[in-house]
Image (tube, rainbow, N blue to C red; front, side):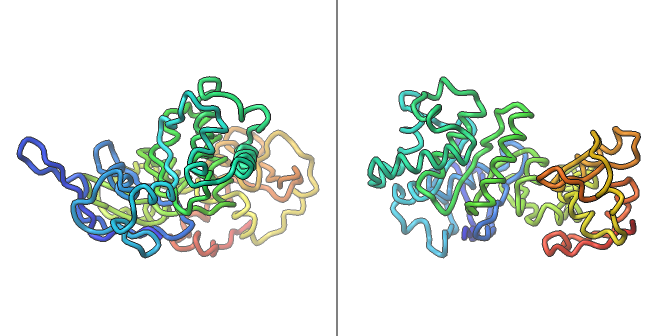
Length: 338
C-alpha cells in the first residue's frame, strides 16, 4: 500500500548538506500499522511527512497503492490521507462537529451526510454525540481532544493514516486507554497506518511491523516478535533494552496459552470466580504481574461474559522459550504441558 524506494531527504545548512533520511526502502502492507521507531532526530517524522508531501523528497520515490505521490496534486493527496499529530491540531474556534467534518466539507459532502458521519465517529470513540458535538476543544480533556483528532482523521474514510506521536502528551493511564480504543477501532476499519513513536512498548503494542531508524537509516524492519527475538545489530539490541524477553510477553494473550494446553481445565471452569482473574485477551506480561501478586498459585481466565474458561499457572510460562518468530503471525504456538 505504501512503498518507499531509495527515499532520501537532504537539507542545506550553512553550506553543508545534512541527510535527514538516507536511501530508505520500506513497504507497508494494506491494513497494517507500521510504527516508525527511534530516538529524537532519527528521521522518523521527516519520513512520515514526505508521504503527504508536507516535506518534499530529495531523491527516490514514494508510492501509494502503486501510484507515485509526486504525480498527484498535493492538496488532493492530503485530503485523501488522514493526519494526526501529538498536539491534535484542532481548530479552537470550531465546534467538535465542525472540526471532525472539515475534510468532508472540503470534499463537498452535504450537511446531513457530514452530521451522520460525525455521529458515527463519536459513538465509535465512546463519546456521546449529543453531549460533545456542540462543544469546543477547550471544553474537553486532553484524552478527549486526542480522540477528536483521530475522528477528524477518519472522517472522510481515508485508506491511509499518518500519526505522529499522537498519544505522546497523554498521561500513562489515559494513554493506555486511548491505545486500546485505537486498536479496537483499527480491528474494524483496517486502515493502512504509519505511526511515529519513540516508545518501544507502544510500538510493540500497536505495530504489525516496526521500522527502527538511526540517523535517517532503517536499522531493522520486521514484526515486533522478530525484532525482540533477533535484533540485527547492537543499536537495535540496545534500543529495545535488556528486558526483551519480558516485552515478548505483551505479544501473547492468555487465551493463546489456554488454546495450546494439553490438559483439560475442567476444575477452573467449574470453580468460583475470585479476585485473581484476567480476561482471555489479557497479555501475558499483565497476567504474570497479577499472578505474582497473588498467593493462589494461579489466576482464572474469564471470557467477555465473565465466565471462567481456564487457569494460568507459573508453570505455563515455561513454554515461551520454544516460540519462534514466525509462530505468532501464523497462530502456530507450541503446545503446553498442563
